Amino acid sequence: MADYTVAAVDEALALLLLVAQSPGLGVTELSVRSGNTKARTFRLLYTLEQRGLLHRAGDTPTYHLGYKALYLGVAAQEQVSLVRVARSHLRDIGGICNENVQVRVRDGLEMVCVARWESTQAIRVHTDVGNRRPLYAGASGKVLLAHAPQAVQDAVLAGALTRFTDNTIVDRYALEQELQQVLAQGYAVSFAERSSGAVAIAAPIIDADGAVIASLSVAGPASRINADNLQGFIDLVVQRARDLSLGLGYAYR
Image 1: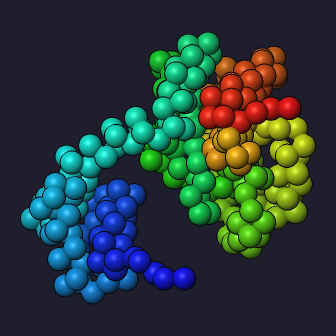
Image 2 (image 1 turned 120 degrees about the vertical axis):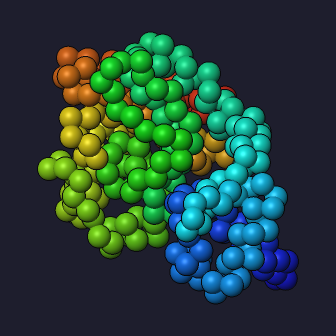
């Protein structure tokens, strides 16, 4: 099969994504991470800077996204159906429970927050759009990992499982069992697996082709999400994930 990839464009876009994920790096570090020479990295960064997609600042220059990157972000929110359909659901769910609501997607062996509604509570579980986390820790990650291809599961299970809290599942057999349970019950719950004192519930979002493309989750402190009301949160998240999936064209039988 013919390869129509333009190498320079591919390298420039990879650098743009690298800066988006790790802002504040200089030419040297970006060249190391991208695998390009320092001279080529500078030329690619300069080109992106001239287009307004990157901004260079400081006496020892570091790179951040430029103002024109905002155009891409705003346009993506309008054009990517997942984010567009999710927006009203997140607002509605937040209005019901006033806890943080997120949509996360899998990117390789990590998950990324692509949409959120933030609680107005003084004490809340905070995250930002673009925030990245490993797949094995937390309710959203367990949903995405449980529905990921076997090769992805094998890679996660074979890699280092960092313990974030006392409740992080770092035993591979226990994690496999947990993923089987997530598949069987159709949702995941985590109790302080990623952050101490935080509880999260997540369910899969399914597209028109029947593929799990994202997770919908609600997260809050254990003082507000507890044994007395947990089932209500589970029912809310599962039902709204189904509604969101219907909005993407998935037909439940």
